Image 1 (cartoon, helix red, strand yellow):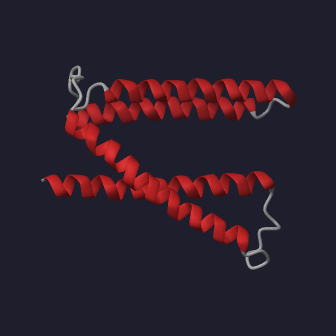
Image 2: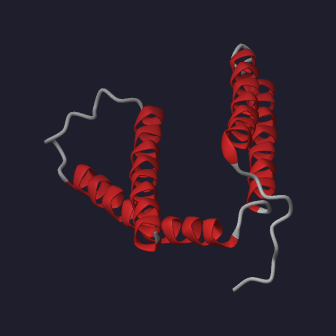
Length: 146
């Protein structure tokens, strides 16, 4: 058991709405900013986009640290367990799918897909599998303890 005590606990619909609202605000500002940065070409456009996304990710990480410090030990354990077992299982499923797709040359027509589209599609496939695995594992963790 950890000796770390949560600061002021967060609970209820208002706390959830506040965290989600702040997350959406950070994502929205980053989306608008990168949209405008997309108009810039060359190294300057790349640098501006990189700075905007890095600041947004740092803000999101800050929100996560703030949130983590305020949830109770049971919630922390549920999230750790779910990310380990669910995330790893999801990654294994996604990896199997990606390895199957790449080893079955000619059976799937990926030739029309640009390299950046293929990369992002693979990343989204892995992330989706991990999030689904996490969600299932999180539900299982709580169901076993209630």
